[in-house]
Length: 194
Image (cartoon, rainbow, N blue to C red; front, side, top):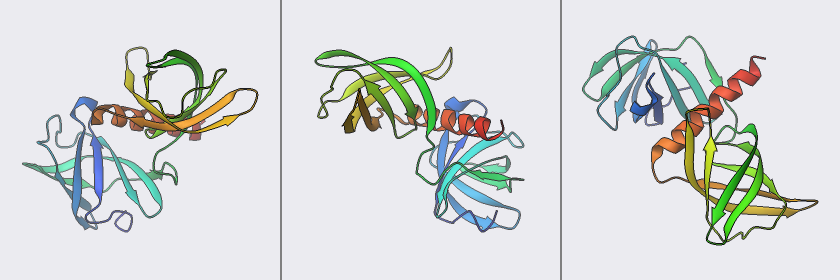
């Protein structure tokens, strides 16, 4: 693991209670673990309680689980994980997400069929053309009790039997992006383990 983690690299840490998601920078890497300096106080972090970790390196998005061996203020000493996975080569993990939803802008509501999502954006089909210069409101259900609300900005529209639209999400805070990152990572791991 030592060769995969880089000093100065940002890492996102998701404890059991995802509301306490935190980010930090890797300050030291050794044979038995690594040290992270958190951006915020480590609420919800306990010694020996497993957390999910997401970071980037030259090979892609790295995902693993581990636990804090030591917590001193905003400094966490993390044990080396037993194993890790690369979620994918692109910045955000993209997964199938076949759902019929609505997006809305100043011109009204549009029915869409979503093909896939990532923490960065989504691809969908629409029977009607949409304005590529508009920003759309969308709500993405992730489970029966959890959803993410954000804006969607189209980047590319292709015309066939229907319009295929690709674009990016715009979040008002960090929680929506983190929830989508976590959702996509779990779905990706579920698909690989089938």
